[in-house]
Length: 433
Image (cartoon, rainbow, N blue to C red):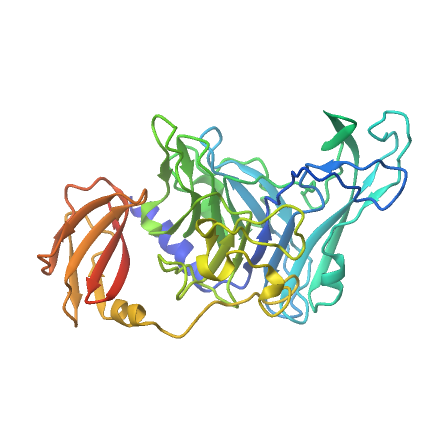
């Protein structure tokens, strides 16, 4: 236990003093639509539906302007599904790359059809045709350093009927910097790490050998600079390995529900969305992992579900519960916020402190995590107290508020404490261990 707590402390301290941050990720771009398109700008290739991630994914990192990243630094994706929890599914080498004058580094990719590639008709030779990533024009106007990876692969076509074909996948894709154009998505923790010099690329390694949500093995010797988790609800157990977790609301049709597993010593921020987000980014130049329950005030991160065919000016879902912050992102596109953020420092939703924020600042809850009880102190009168689980079910409600809240009967996990004072509402996240 002492080793676990020490490791958790080291992770927290490394994140605070980090030199490299995840700035913006599109790891799961929407890749299906009823609209069939030809993204190669050549009459050689018939119109098709683009149903693959290749050339659409977008990785953006933030660091010291002009600085070069040392060797043995990687951007990794750690599996969060219950079949292979803790397995590194991708590890992209960042060593040797340099941040632009605005402190931003971007990785995008193009893909050229390899020798032997045929169009969906099976007869037309389309070798040499190139699919260019859609971010190029916006990146050209930024001050970011852009690493464009040039992949080669063979297209695989799926017959959709009525003369329509879907570009379903690419075969024999080359690998550059440990990346093949399509990173694991939907359930993964994304990290920037530095490994010991003699370790090499950690792709494929297990770093949660006992499946308890706590990093072990090789990870004990890493420097972890930054991390964020995106989880869906497709498995009965979902694993997270960061202090910032975005998770899809559990599917009520699953007989056992979904169990979120993580290292409780990290006390992560957990945000539930109606669907898992395809876009996550740090707000402004933030460095922490704080986020309010309403998704409006004092947030370090933003995340959203984005619409098909809206790249690179991503259009966010009109369903508010699929976005965070909800009100700001819903129905808007990135250009609605003072221009595109692609290749630039991100937008920042930090409005002036509200009445609720002021009330919340006057409330303290401790210890947290708690075993049997938590103490609640406030310089203003609290009228009601409610406790909700992460499914939104109210567990406790009382108007007889005193300094101690008994949590001994609660199961281990994360709960939302809602306090009211007149018309003001404060929410606090508490962890029962």
